Image (cartoon, rainbow, N blue to C red; front, side, top):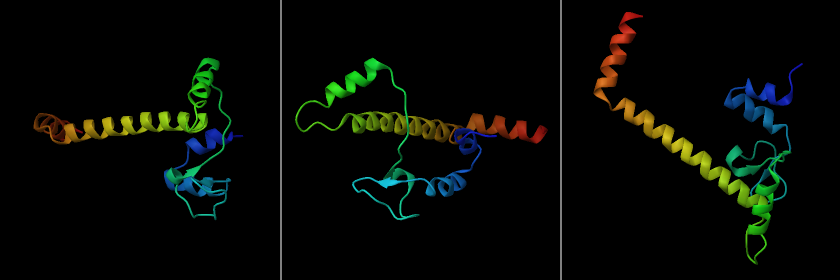
Length: 114
């Protein structure tokens, strides 16, 4: 029997959206969401997460000053920065390859031999 995580890993993005629609999803800035009313980027999904103690303590201390964002929000923001940086780097590499004449010629030659 597959665990929920293993099952989700085998799903396409559309299938995962349908699967996650069955889960409780909270859009940012509100308390309830109608089914199919939100996209993954615009909602919060509750999970259990193990963090190193010093990491958690660091973010809790950052959240102590008045007007500071809650520590969960700060952790989410840092994860989002990492994700967006990775996506930008991937897009940059893809664009670099697609605009590299030497690479495209070598790829064409390789594909012709297959």
